[in-house]
Length: 590
Ligand code: ACM
Ligand code: ZN
Image (cartoon, rainbow, N blue to C red; front, top):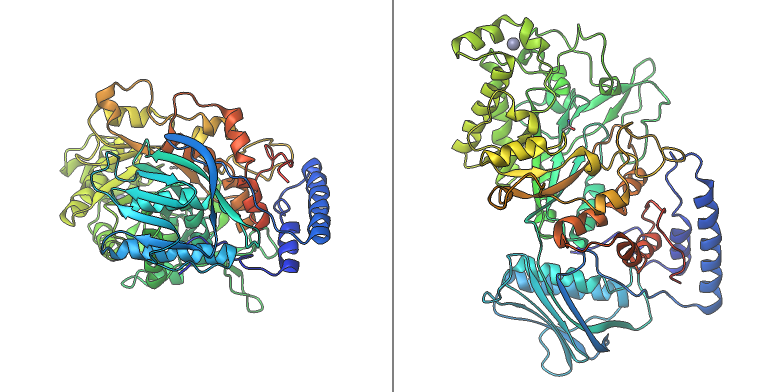
């Protein structure tokens, strides 16, 4: 198993390698931005010339991101060569697996197969030390000229120590010497929840792409992948009891030739006279594969199954669970915008009938069988109450349950789902609208409409994850909008604004601040239909975010951060054909 692998170029022959370098142009969707394009071309051409003339490969001088808590450099280097062996402490299967993973990375990048547990020569040792005074995911890394030791109280900590070492490796196969500077690092995360949300409903992304995203997350020490699996525009998870969720709900009908037929999604070519279909879904087996792949990288996958709103795709398949039960139009990208003709559309489950609750419970039973996360995200955002206002059953429920209004009905809905999840030993997580009409007793709130929802929840003793759209929605512009691919017309979430984000708002006192578990950024994909575009929105903002949640240093310095970004990070992506936003890329590192 290769844990970190942008497999497009690993072990590539030199011609493939050169092509991969030349491939790193901005996404097709980008219009304008000629300045960057021209600069890149000059850079790529001169790099190619250099490589051809001297036949060398590149080693880069790395700088760690996120910045470690403490770091002391000393003189000398550890050179990885045939005289080096790997060791691991104690009989611990996970540690053995980690050692083998590390061995594979070294082999992939240098061609050297390091022996395990040889007694002579230089050593790289991975060890668990439960007495270390560090947080669960913390580690110590000591590099001297003849020894590297990574020690941590948990396997997760060892994993992060290994990631730090790998940041000093080149991004691609090299015949040059691989050396690591002598130093001592003591490191641990500021926050336990360091997350990313990806919307795969508006555009579907393959398992391969999800794995690439997980690799990136792990490399930059993020540990929570929130998988937005359902929304109006598509239902993306196989549910065996309700096959129409994917046979109908996973496929949009679109205008032929529209921008949405992009790479990385499967869509069926139409038979003549039939509409184009666009979409895809994950089988349960694939979802389990993703969960296992993530777990090996210390990443928990939290599934989101949206309710009671944002559910048009599910209701296209099973209209009987909506209020008016009309026959539904199939999912389509028109649903992103204000839909004026909602006569044949329903976005909400009916909260007055029992059948929708039983349906959702059945769905969650299958979801919980696939996902082992403590939390299940039930959405809860942007519920259009007008359906419930007009529905006799919903109005009946409001009377029967003594609820004040439709907001009370939303609260009733969420509380019922919380009870169900609790009976199954899981915790409910929802967007901040779950505060409407009264928060379910043990719910955790994900604050997206600024921080006010999160602040209110923390003040009432509820756990909170901060994900304010400004600046943490990475589907929004990072520069521009001139010269940038189309994005939401809201805040401009620049690299600097992401870097300077602090997950704990000043409005919380020290006691209330304990309820802030951490933070996550989100990528909604209404306008992001290709992997290249996804990478472009992700990088380098993911690194600024990782520093905000892992390092959370009091003396942050953006200029210093961009200096470190230019020490190996851009190059790694560039040489692997991974797209990124080039605004702060100084091309002087060669
Ligand atoms: C959201 O952005 N509606 C959670
Ligand atoms: Zn109803």
